[in-house]
Image 1 (cartoon, rainbow, N blue to C red):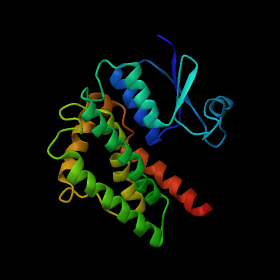
Image 2: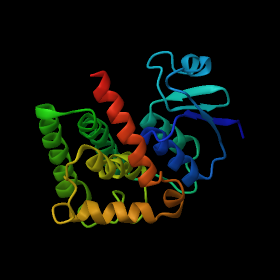
Image 3: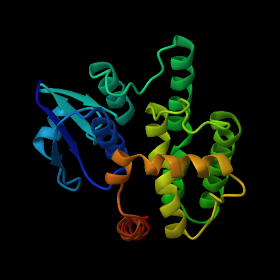
Length: 221
């Protein structure tokens, strides 16, 4: 099999998406740690457009953007297990929610960077996103695809897991179990998948890292 390398920096939620997909598929890879304050020549070569992580390099060919990488992984290694439904309609439905996660999940990251009225606005956006997924995305299913984890779960996983830490950093509470019972049940099921559980950032360490990062952002604002 052609060599697989993942260029990233931890604890990036977008890098974790790719790690989870590779681990679920059983694809061996080399992790190349990037210093985002001093980006390597290789990273700039592989992603000259956005100059961002993650970048998956397979057989010397780079693939950029976390959800694009996940679709590439699914198409390249469609076995063990499949992370997208076989039925064309179900696949289209999954892609809808993946796009929703990409378009609306940004509210969580904006919330992390905000204060004052802007924070209030981004909190409203985040709540609307959570309510939509709670009411229309999951229902009573264990995972978005049904009984098995899939790409939609990997799209939403970092959003909800990081949100629980970002709430503590920012000093707000949005993700309450009585308001979002389906999403709360889902994230617990998600974290109990062995591959996910073994490859989650420690929440206490993540809290320290995000507090420091927010302080840096506020100081430079």
